[in-house]
Image: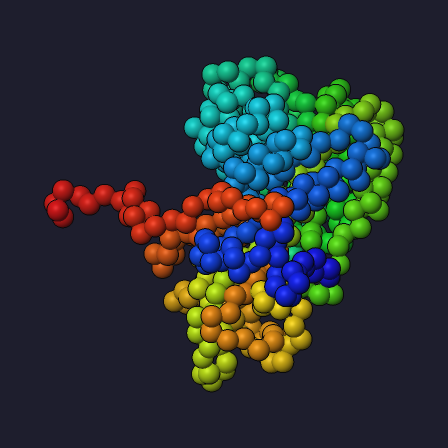
Length: 427
Ligand code: LLP
């Protein structure tokens, strides 16, 4: 695992050329710090890798990973498109400047209101069920609309059971064997199918299940084309490309991965004589995962039956360790490469025992007042944060060339009660 850590002359951790201690002083902690250049590099690396093998290639950034407007705007300027899974994500992407044709809406268990919103905004609609299809066509403006289907290729993968979205246990997509029927029905009901989609899971470092899904989806696409004559304008394999969180995990060899995926894709296009549709991917984590850090300050060193390092963030700020048991590397900002001298627990400030960032983690000497940086906190970090325990959500800053801008203000106590109303009888 390449820690990718930059330090100044004194050995302090820097992010995007900015000193983490200065950032913590200026904006307070806990604080999410996003590195603009890293976002651009990650996007370009995956884009180039695929583009070099197949020019008609598009990335739909899975914005659920991080919906900050600044992140979206950076990617909009890079030429990226958006994978949105809710009306709120559609709204946010539009606010960030994406035109509707650059937004693919993949809802699941959608309401009629959500479908109506998607129709009205003019985004591309990717259907997850026959129920959604039947309800969509009842709505004004549906006639003749371009649609695609998310197909469950009966293979799944992911870093945790919760993150596996293909296979027999998954709620997502239409079954492989009902795909032909679904496309037939869509046409009968006056829609225009233009795409096919899958997403098998998240946090995949082993290319094999991904390749299997590509194989299966292409066979399904080929079948739909042969039996119904549907000409696919795009074929979307979803996201899921993992990043290394824990040593000894290593980076996905994206060049090799793209060669293999595109090779398979082309082979199948040729086999079924399907022309040259746009190849789409929907990475979220790959683009933003390692581009942000969570800075949190140690306020308590406590020797109980175990030794605990207590910090000022909790699972309300970064849920992944508690929710999935995920490993996030944690370093001392004043000496990020310091050798470990002890095994300790790093605990958050939420009133639950599961609020641990690390258990029995080898760490160097840590004192109260020290600043810690939690790595790989760019994806599913702020976007999964909450106000649990009535803690206002934290701030986000974007750093580039040593300069920082606040891109989300820290919430205040007033935000905790802002949307609440007391019934008149209680006044
Ligand atoms: N496309 C669709 C339709 C998705 O549902 C997802 C993720 C993606 C793309 C992007 O997946 P990625 O490239 O980021 O792996 N909260 C979990 C991850 C849940 C992902 C849900 N869907 C975590 O913290 O690991």
